[in-house]
Length: 191
Image (cartoon, rainbow, N blue to C red; front, side, top):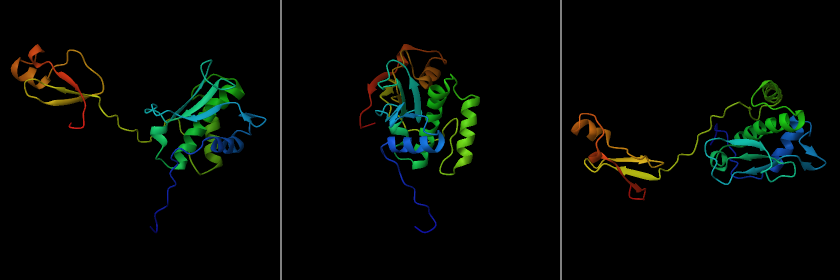
């Protein structure tokens, strides 16, 4: 395909080599002591679907230093290497501010300053405050069926007392009525 750049997809690559490379290039190796990183880095177990990654520290984190970076398997698995690198670097800035600078801030002046330095020093990826990666679609768990018109509506959770608006409007002057109460069924392959 002449004229089309090939995009290398980073489907579940080991994160530690990327971490060490970014640490050398952007954090003066400050996120390691000796050869051991002071923050653990891992892929999510598949449940992290609304954000590309996060940094956390606390007693429940299973790491020698009690801190970790978790990247979203569902969000990042089929995106280019630049998406993985920018997300990991974003979370590394959070770790650096917390563990090296000892400051508590989210996307404040320290974060923005380090982000600007990183973005101006290389052109492989750009760190940003918010990502714009496509989020995986959630498969609805429930289908609600109106007993009168038999219209299907899909829901991710049960909504108690929900009634078919169309039938309530048509048959009961727009007022909720128990005869229009939706019945829920788990979504099967037939829907």
